[in-house]
Image 1: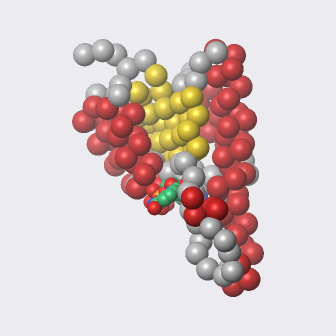
Image 2: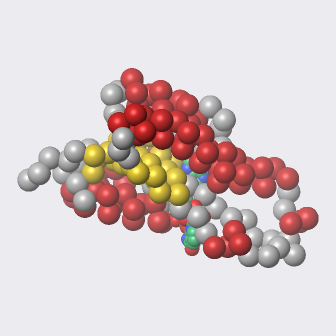
Length: 150
Ligand SMILES: NC(=O)c1ccc[n+]([C@@H]2O[C@H](COP(=O)([O-])OP(=O)(O)OC[C@H]3O[C@@H](n4cnc5c(N)ncnc54)[C@H](OP(=O)(O)O)[C@@H]3O)[C@@H](O)[C@H]2O)c1
């Protein structure tokens, strides 16, 4: 079997679209770094993918709404000499409802995850990709972001 030569970092990889993307990258011979808050669920996904596809899958439990989280992740991967070839900014959500009815803390958390963490991760991981002249970034979003609000 060909040895995996690339590593994909996928946020929000414990369930849903992120987990399916992780599976596709593993199928395509990528090692994985998987991020989400729920450590047990993330570890289970990582273990399943390692067994199924003979890749390395590292579970990295982290709350990306914490402002220190992207730098912490970047620094830790550097220490472990893990270069990221593909960054998938997938973690995110949309709270449905009237703008004035959604508490500010809820909206702020959504902005921190969907926008701030995505921007910070992209800045951090893009720089070494540009140095290597190789790399890919996939930002997962929703057309719901273009829906009019009441
Ligand atoms: N589902 C849809 O119909 C749809 C349609 C269009 C676009 N999208 C977009 O696709 C992406 C994935 O959607 P999905 O429906 O698959 O989401 P989901 O099932 O709700 O999964 C969200 C993932 O993000 C993680 N996550 C949530 N908050 C986090 C945080 N603060 N820090 C780190 N990880 C966090 C969750 O794990 P933990 O809870 O363990 O942290 C989980 O792994 C989102 O960006 C969404 O906007 C979804």
